[in-house]
Length: 356
Ligand code: NAD
Ligand code: TYD
Image 1 (cartoon, protein in one colour):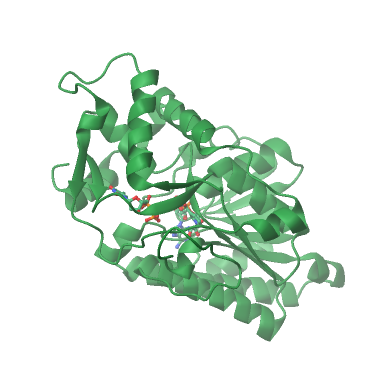
Image 2 (cartoon, rainbow, N blue to C red):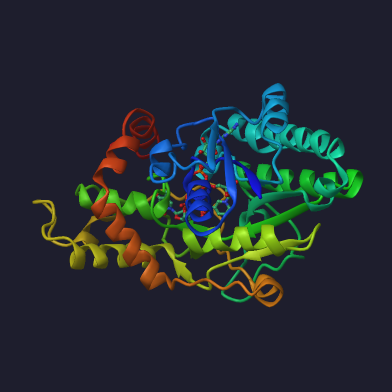
């Protein structure tokens, strides 16, 4: 297949592209606007591959999207481009409304026009795979219960509300126009090339720099963590074998409180680094409780039984093995980290955390 991937310079999109070019025969057209979250450095190992092409475009631009479909004539779309950070959506929802809602609508219309004009065999095999989040389901109260594919939508933040809206658009394009869609909703990802405004890379980098580790509220919120390469494998499996019109939940079977995640990172750094910053006796001493996020979801947890039973996918990494690899990757990749922690990143941390 020739797969048009939106958001391929981001954290998960770049993992999908590396997986596709390394482990399959598919080719890739990466459509990315290169916002603060997009980094071509995450694609260094594949950018010279003859099966890879890059289009520097915004998915909100209808003319550009029509041109991209006409030029590349893809067999499938994997739609990952989005504004993805909950805290940024609280500071300023406008970009989330534009990319997640309008951009998804523009992309659907470009895909529909292309698909309606395609020949019979392409129309039959074409897929539009929308990559979404478990945050559309809102949160779970208490330690019991899991999100299934039929859990009602109840998003809490501007991020999750715009992702929920984009999911509805994709399903409407299937029901009304017959566009052959697939939808996946995944839990929190972590791993290499993760932009360091998100919990895990932020804590690794702050700890190494001897800066406070800002835990929101009491740190007892629970997330289900999935190693990004496991997610990439799941997405390709769904694209190749998922049933049209279906939704698949993807999760890591790794529920953990935020505080436990941060403490584990501290312990791994104690083990894996030779020296701490001078002022730091133990990395755990840097843990600092800060004001909670407004509307903070308490617990996310996924029932990933459907994708396992229908498509035979299970995560390979445990949280222990995946987190160890991740911490080691950040220790080994100063160049990538330096490249992304300049201008826009510093502005964000100064604005959101003050001096932290
Ligand atoms: P990310 O923020 O790291 O990357 C987003 C990418 O989209 C960037 O390369 C950015 O340049 C690009 N982009 C943003 N706006 C664009 C636009 N208007 N036009 C073209 N490109 C644009 O995000 P991520 O963490 O890789 O997430 C990818 C997708 O997976 C998102 O749709 C997100 O909702 C979903 N998801 C993320 C997680 C997670 O834990 N990170 C979990 C489940 C689902
Ligand atoms: P995040 O990585 O932003 O993902 P999401 O909000 O999509 O789950 O945050 C993960 C959890 O970590 C979430 O409960 C908020 C919390 N958190 C902190 O406690 N401190 C921080 O500085 C950040 C960025 C997140």
